[in-house]
Length: 294
Image 1 (cartoon, rainbow, N blue to C red):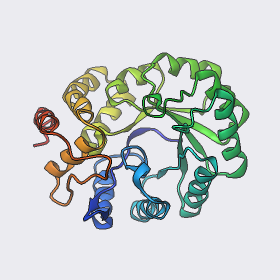
Image 2: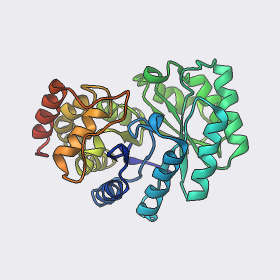
Image 3: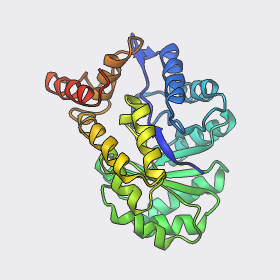
Image 4: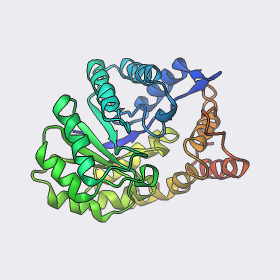
């Protein structure tokens, strides 16, 4: 259903508000440069600092601007199950193709709680769900056995996972524990994209693709063509940028990088985030030069 280079889009701000014009231009640029789907309101989109009204407007604009050229996977996660459902219902009405639902953060639910959370969403919305596991941010870890149970219980609802656990063995755990072959595994750590693909992944929901969509799309195309030499060459070109994107609290480095690549974007982030440090900017600049982007 979903594969390829999929940017987790930043949410541009100007004077403290959502910069709709800049976002529309970013969406066009992404599609023109080979991104296979778009994710608004994920972690990189600073969803945790958006009001529900803003959250929904960002999704709405993304769908409008994409205009069916590529699918939109909307960030619908929340640590409040009812609020996650609210996002899913709105996204479904907008024409979104799936909801990216992060494991509830802060509450620290048990595995039984996670099953109950995702089961509730699956039973109250017909929007396909892409599970999102990022224990480094949520503290809660979606264990492989929990993922397999959910997917086997709701095969038409739980269509994929963005795995940012850093544990590559889980790709095989999921593949072997899930009945059927349609479940989509997407990497959530850019620097592991190549290895994740070798284990059975079909793409990446990427931070780096915000800044280097063409390089990331070409990289994924090389992987899909089983051209390992080309994939390694492009991976080496992108590798410093993957790490530079996290040289300070994300997405501050990504927004700084975009401000270096485009004059219609700036590096504004919302508190409690602050703009990238001097050291992070140096790392980003060096990585952009290495990738041939500046």
